[in-house]
Amino acid sequence: MKGECSCGSVRYALGAAVQGVYYCHCRDCQRLSGSAYHVLGIVPRASLQVASGQLSSYTKTADSGHAMVREFCTACGTPLFLKGTRFPEIVMFTVSSLDDPEAIRPGFQIWTASQRSWSRIHADVQSFKRGALDEQGESP
Image (tube, rainbow, N blue to C red; front, side, top):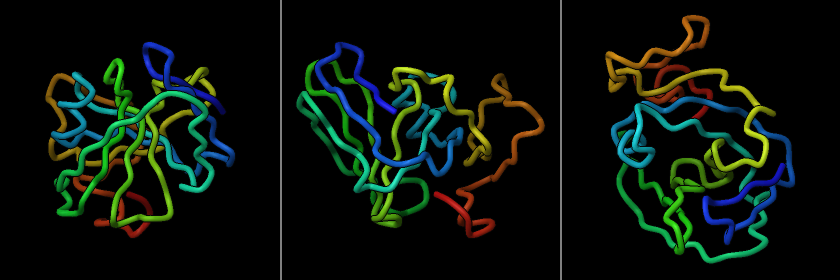
């Protein structure tokens, strides 16, 4: 799979199968997406290949209490990648930045304790009030 930022200066490729896709309703993702949630995919960190463009980043303590490095295009500010200290072997990418975001579908949602009352995901999607790992030991 391949993707890019809004202005097209950052291009990337994912060299491995996507391990999971989820909706995140945490307050950080709400603020960063400018919406009610972010839709994120998970791949092994080593499989991410940035082909062009410049990334900038900042580190913030997430609602989980763990440090998250958020990477974005320096030219247009599009959020692209998240790397956490809790899961150093994976990278999360914004599904909306994929060339074909229809190619994958979210399977669960996390941080529903912060979910906006006016934004509901399909009832058949598995839900976690906090992170899935906090409740079941499965994913970020």
